[in-house]
Every structure is written in structure tokens, then in C-alpha cells.
Length: 310
Image (cartoon, rainbow, N blue to C red):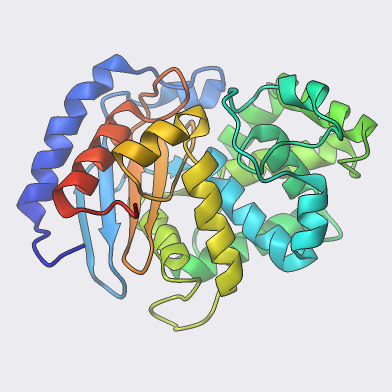
């Protein structure tokens, strides 16, 4: 991003994109997420150290949901290595919805197509090393803390409980994969961890910092520590480009061209290679599960400052 970024321009883009919130709906199929205000929209653009611009309802907290899939993939790759992870999860995009079971049934072997759909993310979460749910979640939170320099971040118990109690389809995916030896763990224990990982709570500033570390080849700009190995960040950004916006990923790549991952809470994490981290929150979703206004905001941001990687 060039030096021409200024607060007034960001404020204007948020106000313009906010008009699109009326075309979306909050994800009330998870009861706790149904309480969100659909008119909310906020963004943080982080360029390292204390260099951060933000606009909108920036102090509003929300949960990672599917954005957590990027972080669990990073942790699983660090724990197990590429050969192990990708022997159980594929690398191919899909045009099916993120919670679809269709490809599990039709593909041989019956492994998920990629780590960004629910089936793939559940299989990846199953690979995280630890003796208990608490230890595994603690390791994931430690990674989040290292990337954001914020050790106060945790998970929302209310959202996690709401997701766990209504995770009927995810249970079905897990049992199917356990039948085919993709998943090894106890299903209820795995879902307990998965719903808690999805319920990790933060604001746009913290989300932008997560995106920045991935954009910055795994290095924390403040501590200068290599939090994630370089080769793993390249894998993460590739999946974010090809699969990160559910079955809108192809259109998003053309219109925006930024490695990004969305979640049904309305969050979007962007990672412009060697450049910036972006955190967006707009809980009004389109039919594919992406923030309606957030997508418009990213499109404007990319166009105005020529952020596309293509």
C-alpha cells in the first residue's frame, strides 16, 4: 500500500460499503451469532509496528469462525509436516458450499478436498498435538498471542457452547471421516476443540495483525520473531487465494486479488504479501457466507491502492 493512505479516505470507503449491509443477513443458524447488528462494519489496516489505520466500529469484538482454519492449518503443519497433513486433506478448491458432504461421498479416497472447508478444517484440527482439548486450544491461543502481541485474547464461551450444541452437520462430517480413517479422535472431544477454536474472540486490530504476520512471511514485526516458518506462510496464502472465500474464491480473486479468509461471524482477514494485514468485521452475510459489505470494502480498497497480487 502506498503512502497515500489516509484516514479520510478509509472513512469514506466504510460509509460507502456500509450501504450494502441491507443486502445480507447474520448467521442465525448458530444462535449466538444471530444477536449481531447487521449494520455494523469496521476495518483495520496494519502495516507493522504501530502503523495502523482503522474506521467504523473498530472496538466491536467478534469470533474468528472459519478464519481460524488458517491458524489451525499453520499449527498442524508445524506439528506434523506437509506429507502427514496432505495425506489426509487435499489441496484442491471446490465449488460446493463450505459445509457440503457431497465430495466426501463421491471422491476416492474419501478425504476432504482442502483445509478451508468444514470437513477439511475438522480433519486438520484433529492433527493438532496435545494431551487434552485444553492443551491443544492453549497451543493455538499461544500462536494467536504471538502473532498479535495480545495475551488477553481468549474464546467466547457462549458462542462456543451455541455452536457445539447445534453442530449436527459437522458431527455428520466427522463420523463419515472417522469411518474412512481420516479422523482419529473421539468426535465429541474434537467438536469441543473445533467450536472453541472458531469462538476465539478479537477485534479488527488484532485480526489485521494476524493477517500481517502471514503477509510478512511469518515474522512478527514488533518482536522480529519467526512465528510461522516461511514455507508454511506461502502455503497459507495460496489456500487463502484459492479457497479462502468459500465458493466465491474465484470471483474474489479477480475482483480483489488479495489472499483472504472469511468467517460466518462476518470477519475477513486479508494478507497482502510483503505489505499489509487487513481485518474487517461486517456480520451481514451473502448466501455463500461472506460479509456483503466487507467484500465491497475490500474491492474498493484493492482498486484504490492497487493491492491485487495478480
